[in-house]
Image (cartoon, rainbow, N blue to C red; front, side, top):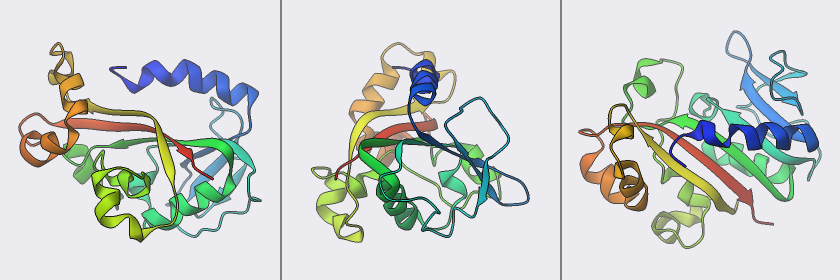
Length: 192
């Protein structure tokens, strides 16, 4: 996978046949929640995503899609804990967010979080970040898909994006301000 959009047909079909929570921007700083339909823009419910718990029962959803949302929220750990709560066993959350080295991460004044591909490793047992800082949360996920996408023209250099994704820690520590990241795409399955 080279671009997150390669997963869009799968996610669209999944949303047609499963119960999916669509998290998205609303208006005037609020966020909308859409249940089940990916293409529909108008939310079913306006919810302050900065204030979990969300108004859903435990184990209510097969997936939660958070496209360009997480970076706007204040409490990373509480949000993921509540997403974990409302996902069914085997359910997953999909995240699309700017990489911290992308200028767009800092240009938008409504962005509260500037995230690394490894920011989510706080929830992933076996990762370097989890080994050192897993105590921040009892929430656990496993990686289904993970992609750090590079800015053009770098995303078109044969094999470069694959190398960056295999050595993400090295890339983020030493190279990301020369070869900038564009975005992060993740599918994280709730471990229950």
